[in-house]
Image (cartoon, rainbow, N blue to C red):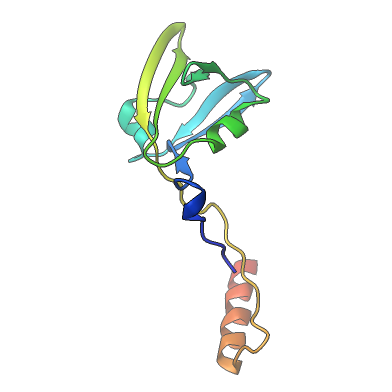
Length: 125
């Protein structure tokens, strides 16, 4: 069962539309997804990410810092691109689900059980 985000806690989790990788202690943008805020702002793969909103990021802090971003939040990214320091202003959008889990229903009908069995078999090919 998927648990929806609790709107009472605050805004939904946000994303800029980029993935990162660690290279020693540096944070490198590994890819930028077309049509996302990072793409529209002009960020590129292989840009070295130095800071988010003026706060330094490194291999140990990047995941937590990216997870703090909320939809609609404006984020300033400082990057090095081939020895040139650049700054980008990006507005986060709602973060889509990255993964889903399927659990069989206890009282599933025969048709539902057959669908799950066929679907699981397709995934094994």
